[in-house]
Image 1 (tube, helix red, strand yellow):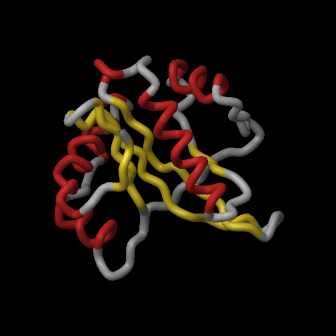
Image 2 (cartoon, one colour):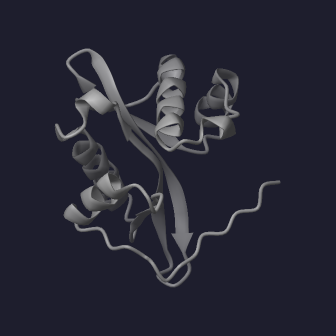
Length: 147
């Protein structure tokens, strides 16, 4: 089962964020708290949305996404910030179900595309995304400015 997260799911969302950070060897960069997630995901201005995947009553993964915009297409898009499935549930179609749900939401909202980033060493994720029909945008370089 996949459903949208609610305010009561904030501790679970934080657990998954810490899980993906550990997998990506980036735990030292996690600054988020339950309070920050509550404010930014469920406050007056909602900056992103979260889907949760379940195996029965057990939460096994999440996808966090938000809208962006393509000037070249003059259409909204969807950016998938995080897709994470607990290690013991990988290979059981939970990641595929989450990604497909994000794509369905994007189609229903008349988005022109769904985009995301993946670390260049994460071959399992790269292979998974390619198996879903995603194209690598190798000619683009991601820049970031922390403010």
